[in-house]
Length: 281
Ligand code: C2E
Ligand code: CA
Ligand code: CA
Ligand code: CA
Image 1 (cartoon, helix red, strand yellow):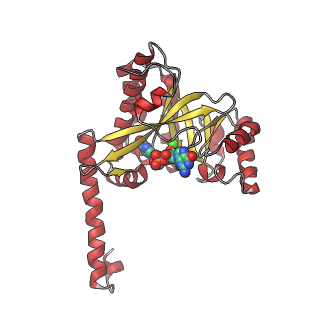
Image 2: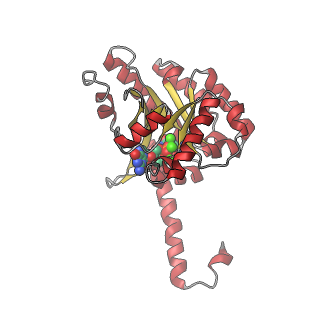
Image 3: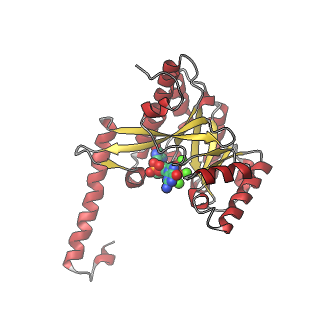
């Protein structure tokens, strides 16, 4: 690190120091935010493309700092991963999503009819034993495991295949659904797809948003859809921004869609309102 900066100007050194200090400041602030419950989850609907009905909500983390600035996950998840804070953050997300879903059931006077999906980071899967965390959240809220989806990326699997396979089987035995996130962007070792208990492939937004303009993207989406079908998996298209995309994907046989056409990530109350029950008290 020192070798890298030597020979550079004084001002560069100062700037480098500032960047390092900012990352540390962010880590400190994030640690405090987790302790003080200053994070919240937003919920984005995932819809059945054939019927348009909401089948689940993906929980997406947001952080509002003490000055009222809101940070998107791409700003703070990397800091959380590097610092190890992803473990308490990830546990909180599982518990918070379960509490919200249980509250919706209560307001609906029974099963409100949707699942909740929570993201798991590769680092979190390496550092934490995740199935007992999910089991405890289910026990605390009385929810059935069938109401939970866990989304993980290909990088998680590549990083430590045996450990991740063990965690995935443990999660399946709780009844949860497992989704492969951002499919198509990671390493293209397809062997794991057959070996691991994956229920849903989420087709990365980069293939979906450009589908109508780029024929190659359509071919990739078609290929992923037939691969999933051959393996008995369902599919979710990310980044469905227009009605035309929703129609096209439905015609191609994609199971679910998620994106701004249906709704942006919403506050919990607004998400619940989409289900058409009376508002919670
Ligand atoms: P992701 O899992 O791929 O989540 C989808 C992202 O795409 C979300 O960004 C969502 O707001 C955005 N999105 C949804 N529909 C559309 C659309 O139609 N067009 C466009 N352009 N974007 C759309 P967000 O909320 O900023 O989250 C970014 C990433 O941060 C997520 O990507 C996920 O990998 C990660 N993340 C979010 N919450 C958590 C968490 O609690 N734990 C972990 N480990 N990661 C999280
Ligand atoms: Ca996701
Ligand atoms: Ca994704
Ligand atoms: Ca993504």
